[in-house]
Amino acid sequence: MSRCILAGHAAGPVLACDEGLSFWGGVDGASGRVIDAHHPLHGQSLAGKVLVLPTSRGSCTGSGVLLELIQNGNAPAALIFREQEGVLTLGALVAHHVFAATLPVVQLDSEAFAWVSAQAQVTLSPAEVVSGGRHITLQPVAGGQLQLSDADQAMLDGEQGEAAQLAMRILCSVAAIDGAQQLIDISQVHIDGCIYASPALLRFARHFDQLGARVRVPTTMNAISVDYANWRQQGVDPAFGQPASQLADAYVHMGARASFTCAPYLLESKPAAGDRVAWAESNAVIYANSVLGARTAKHPDFLDLCIAVTGRAPLSGVYLQPQRAARRVITVEAMSDWDDAFWPLLGYLAGELAPDRIPVICGVSQMAPDEDDLKALCGAFGTTSAAPMLHVQGVTPEADLVSSEADQQHLSRADFLRAWQQFNSGDHKVELVAFGSPHFSHNECRALAQRMAGHQCAEGVSGIVTVGRATLAAAEQDGTLAALQQAGLKVHPDICWCSISEPVFPPEARTLMTNSGKYAHYAPGLSGRAVRFGSLSDCCEALVSGLAPQQPPLWLR
Image 1 (cartoon, rainbow, N blue to C red):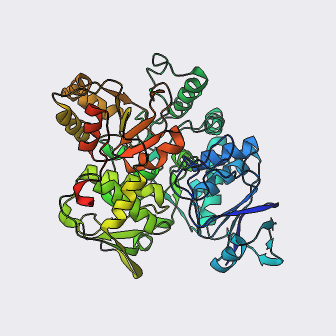
Image 2 (cartoon, rainbow, N blue to C red):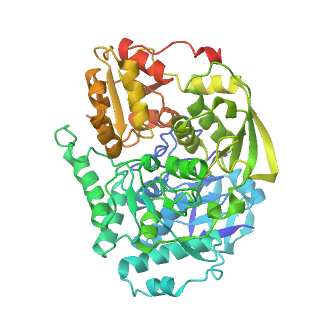
Image 3 (tube, rainbow, N blue to C red):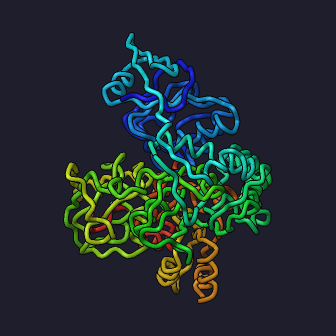
């Protein structure tokens, strides 16, 4: 069945791709140009096009980038998806509910999607899609299934204030699209919309703050775009630093905790198995579901605040046990003498094989991944897949949840080598080594300090670690911070590599190296620099010598 998700009229040239796209890190929020260096649409402008994709992928902040494009006039004319999609749809819903702007969103069945993808032009109305002389009928979203509690209805009627009323309106729209029959209580929220990816995120937060919004449940905050206490001393341009810190202030004023980390699972407040939470930030969502066994949908930016203000979320998706089952089995070729680069490469490749469904990864349990390995796995998986979780046979708590209809895929050593080579297109000479995407844990900081003991960063090479405030405090207390600084590394709280800016990001650096699969993917588009990728040991070697290894690791040869 083909559905009209958000009604409107549009017409324009078709820009189609069979690969999902993350708007955050993949699309320039000012111009609408695709900046993801690894995407087939790289360099194309989305402005005025009818964008036809199977679904989106990657960061929850894509909703904020789309809202900015809608407001600055460089958005696509319409969005057409094949799968149910939440991140970009939410950006369009917020534009409609909060700022009275309309961008049509449509979901087509597989056959109609393939037809439109092959056409040159398309016209949309609330009732149909017309392309290539064919009229495709659209069904409206069925909104009558949602049963609100008395408290929900009171919020929707405005009895709890304007902010709660607006938040409930948005939640009800999302619930209707998802086919949810009820809303559920949420025990905690993690806000991703505090990253200053575009002015639209600040406008949204200020709007809710001015309406008197206050969070109803414990709410943590993602990494922000500046080192909150030090950005002025660091020389960050006030034109960026000021609105970035104001965005953080708005969420703190609404009651969120200034945790400022993209790895909330490292906090003492992390949820337990079975807890219903509402997290945004793609790596955090995947880790919470997959490793902790908590339950959260992949909530886009903006919806996270709506849930925090109401304490309620639609009961749909992976909140429901059957939806958590793997629909693809990925078997990994047995390997020996692997290093820690294996896990981000595995996550990246698994996401490529399961871009629109939950996979179970088999054949790696004997490698006994620790929490940091799983963090790297989940972070990289979220760059290439839209799925909110994965399973690892013999490792993660729900790995026995496999659909009877799941299909089979295989990952070979050659696949890993291909991904390694893709991540290592940069020059042999390295000027920057980047750690902490997602934020480094205390254990990772200690491991880095141990490897750098007795060594110094080479002249002309910067080493930077990004961490959450809690990790920084622990590293300072046990001497790890001093050891890292003695080796010449800089450690920055609050920010992460996905939001860092010059001059904290060294302007003179032309090639960077990282052990993060997530940042290896996003860095070319976000920073404009060439990238090298490797294990923690490889990165330390580059810190000391200024040179990245020229050959793949032994386990890939």
